[in-house]
Structure formats: structure tokens, C-alpha cells
Image (cartoon, rainbow, N blue to C red):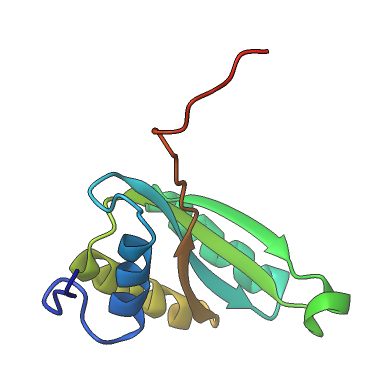
Length: 126
């Protein structure tokens, strides 16, 4: 299939969405997308978390394992259920970047789980 650069522009977001599409992910269905903001202190992360809760966002907060990451950063994820469309992701990235800056954090990108089901597979009875 030929890539439609209007729906999947040649940049990080467009490339990831195109990759998801090529892998068989149904991008017309809602996905839970995690937008991540990192903070150096728990206090900064908690202030931002309260702000996002007031904005009716579903969130999770955890500290990176210093042995694995080499840092003590706090990661705040906002979980947004949406149809993954390029323009909407771009808009939300801008919004989360502004919020991250307001609370002395750094926007760190987005991702989501993809589920691929092979409906043609037959199950054998034992």
C-alpha cells in the first residue's frame, strides 16, 4: 500500500502512526494513548498530577528505577482514550508540552499498546 502523507506526514508522529497501520493496527478504533511528562522531583510531579486530575485526565505516576535508567526521574502518564489521528495527537502533544513547562517538567512523548488478533486462526479441540 502507498503511504498517504496527508494522513501520515513524514515526521515522528506520522511515521509511528504509519508503522502502526502497516502492522495491522485498526486506527479507526479507539486506543488508550499514554502521553508522558518527566519531572526531577516528586513535588513537581504531584502538582502537575493534581492539575491534570482537575482537567479530568486519567493519570498514573511512577518513579523510574535508578539502576535501570541512571536517574531518579518521576514519570507522569496521562491516559487518553481516542482514535489515533495525526492532528489530534499533534494538538495533545502541544497541550501536554505547555503543561509540562508550566510545572517544570519535560514532555517525553506518547505511545500505546497495540493488539493484533488473528481471526482466521482455527482452534483445535483435544
